[in-house]
Length: 73
Figure 1 (spheres, rainbow, N blue to C red):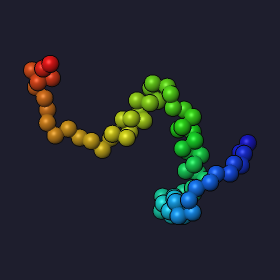
Figure 2 (spheres, rainbow, N blue to C red; figure 1 turned 180 degrees about the horizontal axis):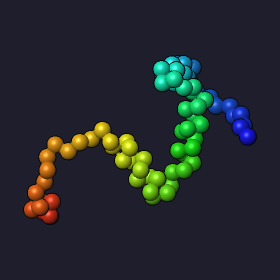
Figure 3 (cartoon, helix red, strand yellow; figure 1 turned 180 degrees about the vertical axis):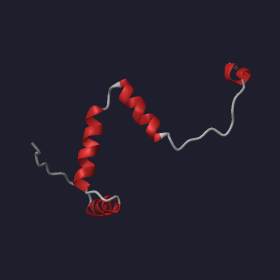
């Protein structure tokens, strides 16, 4: 069962968020529900790790360390 809630935000921010959602072929309401699911599931170590890895997926190594370098203190 879906419940309605009322949120407040800057008008321009809401307008821009709706435009972005539309460009992603979704709605602001759907995006908020997805965010709410992620927000409430945070806290488990495995889930936190998965979210972090997704956020860092753009990064690629440019240098491969040798064993001695990795063990330097």
